[in-house]
Image (cartoon, rainbow, N blue to C red; front, side, top):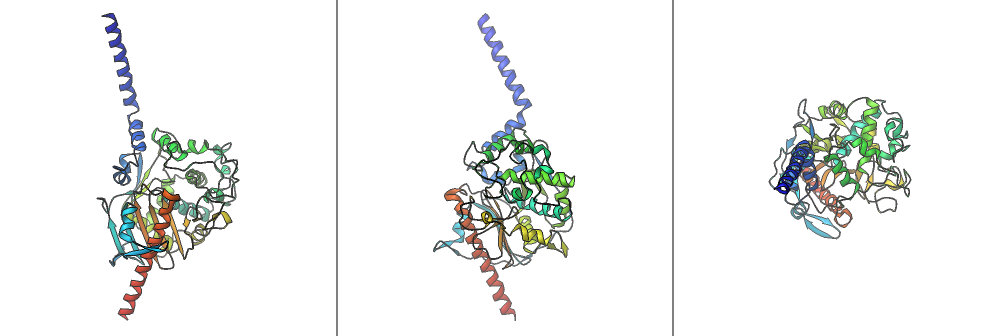
Amino acid sequence: MALKSTLGKGIGIIALAIALFTGIFSTEIRQLYHTIHLFDEDVIVHNFSNMQDIAPTLTIPRSGETHALDSHPKPLPEVFHYKGEDRKISDYLTSSNATAIVVVKDNAITHQSYLQGTQELDKRISWSMAKSFLSAIFGIAVEEGHIKDLNAPVTDYVPSLKGSGYDNVSIKNVLQMSSGVYFNEDYGDFNSDINRFGRVMALGGSFDDFAASLTQDPEREQGTFMHYVSIDTHVIGMVLRAATGRTIEEYFNEKLWSKLGTEQDAVYVTDSTGEPMVLGGLNLITRDYARMGMLFRDNGVLNGEQVIPVQWIKDSVTPDAPHLMPGKRDNATTDFGYGYQWWIPVNPNGEFLALGIYGQYIYINQALNVVIAQNSANRNFMANNYESKDIAVAAFRAIAQSVAEETLQTADTNK
């Protein structure tokens, strides 16, 4: 009886401890569970349209008059050309697990589709497309004189990074993903730095503290190798906060969001301190991603106002060092070129992209005046050394060319 009583008390204490632990840390446990299973095949589509149910978020309300878009529906081309063969656009949308695609020529939507049971007003996760949004407002801060020299070390603005991998690393090298900081960005590796970052976020950690925990890669000097480090973008956000004395959400709203003419609110995933995840936590409807693309296509001008400095846009999409140029090279981990948080495809013709993991794209073709925004839940995005992004660009080029040719034919018919 005494043994049973002792066992009963022990089990009771353990049960009480579990109850207390799960009660106190229920949010963190729920977030960790969702983080671990975020990309599971049976939930990935739902998760990518419902991040507010998975992680802490903050909302930036839309304001001002919506930038109305005309509607000139046109069918997508049936095929596109890739590596010597014709492929079907419909097969591309299926294989890329697309959830939405919006095509804009001039000021008109020529095509929009919402797939896999998702809806047009779903706020879809940007992943790394968010980096291009941060770059835009960073350029405004440079224009306003808050940041006077891109060659200055980030630690001039953020002393808390002294002693970390970012100590004495220039702002420009961080902007261009050439920081020399060691980072494993493999989403398929449970123990990679990017997945460790996700778990830290889920368990209530601080993005700032995580950035300060990184170290320099002894084999890669800053400014010599293009190595994609998502935390570089967070560090740029830290510099922006320090230089302006403003929160990211305040500056983002005042300088960009309130001027973009969006239809819906923006939602940012945050850490436990409320700091926006500027490296990939922005959630918008797909048409509002397209509006951002239109702003950059039009060199930062909307309704007669220069929202983004035109020189910043030019610099953002113009690689200026050998390791940043598009094409095969030994001093980069990709064949795409890179600017200030924007991507440049191989053999560009007035083209550049915001690009996010699992198939998020804002494709901008200034030569043809076309923007294509696509959201996806492509679990094969990283296969064959990220070949999916090359396939996407080939599809986008065919769509843009088709839309431009139909516009010319219509104009000739109306003469």
